[in-house]
Image 1 (cartoon, rainbow, N blue to C red):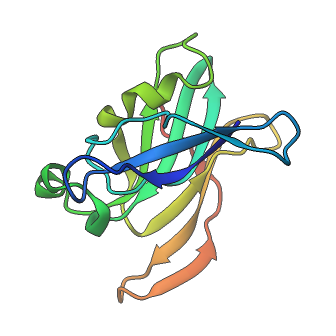
Image 2 (tube, helix red, strand yellow):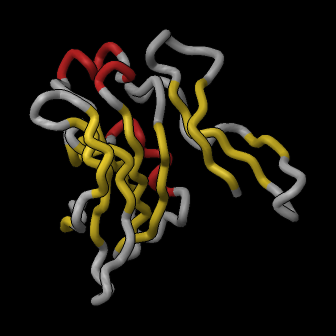
Length: 151
């Protein structure tokens, strides 16, 4: 399976972000599948998606800055950054995709492109790029491990 940032052909402008899906039997030949998320969740893009199963629950991290938020979400969110959607325990590896409309911001735009590795003790942590400094300029360094926000 391949999941990638994509945009639907239909739906309100600024609210068409989806996660595209393709399958391959050999990693050379790919067949496009229907998107695994639907447009209208409040995002014009779901950038750099990462899916993990954490404590039995599917967790999807993705990035979206405020300028790429859909109009309704932009009206209530002062910033964008790293977002998290979760699915119910036992809902399988794609369970979080059905809940993208309930995604919550876990870091403002000072951080971007969150990843969820495990540390040496086996605990889930969050790593990300330092995106924006106090002066508003791009920083581009990688953060130290932080506790992974839990649903």
